[in-house]
Image (cartoon, rainbow, N blue to C red; front, side):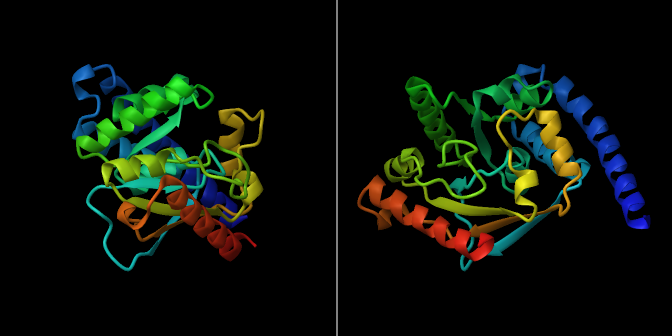
Length: 249
């Protein structure tokens, strides 16, 4: 009883902090000159961390690095949930690639857009091509970009194949890929099931039987080590299947 009371009070404080953080960030999003600026991005990352607190998620970053992160990189991760949309930028200084529907989310969509989030309509080939160009433009300006080679939330397990887009961009730009493997202790409560609303999913996070979210980051892959995007994709996909066996089976 004492434990649950403490948890509820902690989350209430988190939601109060989230409201107080969201209001100025939302108002600032109406100033076009601030869109994508370093000051707004820093506020956005703080907002993501506050959001994690409000949801009561115990987010842990596990660094399995044998060398420092590259100065510029493409970050990829498996995508079992929607939590990654705030979890990844709370830990890494990246611009997220998100589905176009996120842009229309009340308040959060506007804040994400102003922070530099990139959007794609996954079923539309021309939209995917435009997103690839936007990613390359962001990389050219010195930004790091995070995306999900599974092509969206598929299942709690790694999808049977990765899309080639990020590996093609890495080969063409020479930018390395930093892999992150995401492991939620309460897998089914964190997974975004078909038909669930954003509010329903948030309630799942807040009431999860185990609130631990583990984000494992590993050494970057160098594009010069691969001869083709297919080889690149296959090697990285196989590595994710290995992590899946290690952490989920």
